[in-house]
Image (cartoon, rainbow, N blue to C red; front, top):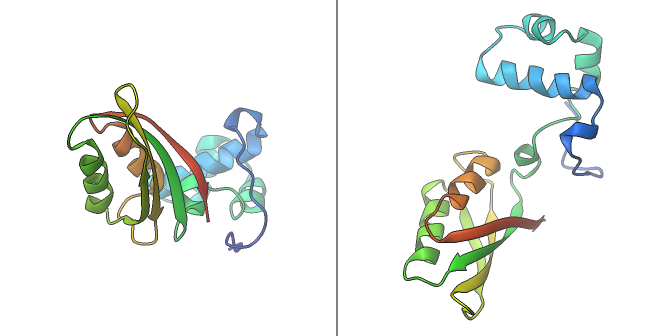
Length: 149
């Protein structure tokens, strides 16, 4: 397997990827979810050659896999209400995220900006799932990934 901890990475929108790479991603997802028992079965369902799958499989993966064991910094816009930041922190803690830093600005016009850095090594779920949960917390207006280290 390729060592994705070294090298240069790019975030690219899926719609510009070649079809073979898109299908490789779907095959990996099918195998992970158990929708196909074998690689052969999965590539046949996706109408992808085995050689194309093996060519790309170690080089394409979801954003959250590259975020494993890293510190991810989030920018969050919160309603200025009691307990909103606490609910955000509890959501992170419940999925075993480790909060490294928290910076919150003074609330203006009913909202406050917060920056939270999270260590992802022990996350019980993938990063994308955690981000989805955080976006659903009552009082979270906006959430963006600023970067990762």
